[in-house]
Length: 252
Image (cartoon, rainbow, N blue to C red):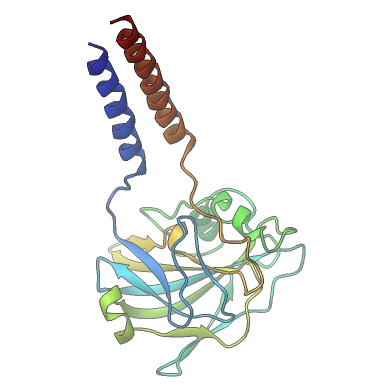
């Protein structure tokens, strides 16, 4: 009976951990850096190259649509930068950014809400990333930041490649450097009637400019509290069962 209880506790703990850690499958975009890589740490994809040479890949892909790059610049108690220019390294085509709001930066709530409130496309079907998913990581390199100035760069209709064919797609860079703590995210949008649906880069696959002198910036993924709690329950149960088994062995 004791062994049965022990097995059930351990199995329940492992199943709970697997359930919490396994993400649901969905169409996503992932930031990719050509020169020095920007690996997914579980919470961001940091780069030390400024400006980075980058693109976004589609999973699954390839996928085509209106490709938009969002630039989240730390507000840093300063006025917003005048703007940014992105260039395709191969074709030398350039695109200029549009600042969504020059007086009020994004400091709370969801990114999608802020963008649509400031004239961005109606992102039906959801871009709901909260400012709390970006700001704490930015504050590792810019402690005075309380939010972000949000810029949009619309590259028009583009096809985003898979990782295997990344060299056949866009190869982008900025014509100037980025403020440290700036995030580069991507949206691929398609329209059907009055509905526009966009695929957004998840936080962990969003590129963040950290520069070369920030060894403590790379925040690793930390298990969620519920995961730790369930795992702890399993360990406590396992220890109790082991003690009972030792007592029985001594008694025998």
